[in-house]
Amino acid sequence: MPSVLFESQYNPPAAFFAELLGADALWLEAHDNYRKQTYRNRCLLLTAQGVQPLTVPVVDGNRSEKVLTSAIEIDYRQNWVHRHWRTLQTAYGGTPYFEYYADYLHDIYVQKPQLLFDLNLLLIRFYLRCLRLRLPVHLTAEYSPPLLPAFDSPLAPDFVRDRRDWLTPKDSASSGPDRKSVHPYPQSFGKDFVPGLSILDLLFMQGPAAGSFLA
Image 1 (spheres, rainbow, N blue to C red):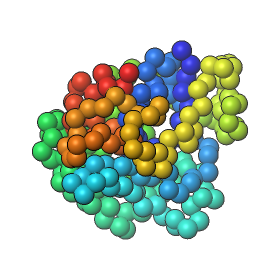
Image 2: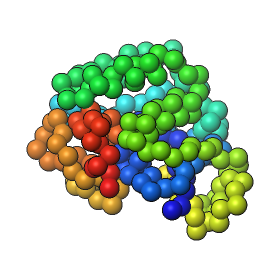
Image 3: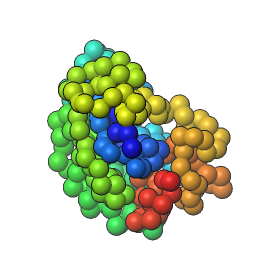
Image 4: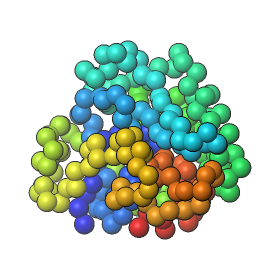
């Protein structure tokens, strides 16, 4: 099966991990320029008020798109960790598996990595373990345009599934599941299934069974 190439994402959508089923490896793009309003620094959660984005503030955000994603620093002058954690507790504190994962997640946040890329990598590795997706995670050595090998590897392009910027927050505007969604599962709020949410929504609702909704 091909390896999959994604950009770094913060609490990625469940569809990010669905793409990894059967893959040989996950490659994370370490040499792209940062882009605003993407999953690089935001995720989508379901609250009583509907879908809510959580955004990690970055240092010098106005000039951030001229900086490599892997060099973007997190702005801890803003108390975003507290806000994100309070939102998670409010939205998911009553779900079946919030307490099951809460301590592990909290331990990652309190490390306060300097770089956004490092925070995302810690979270992605944690979710891979939760979903029992046992595949190596590699970082690209240089940037290559779409559809070309983006790293020093003997693999041909046919064996690398390029999914950089394949998922965007705009996808969440869809009214129902699509090819970038996962199988519907019971959610905390509303009657209709809401696609495009962070993997956290699925984990908090389904726990160790979450992986079965990715296929």
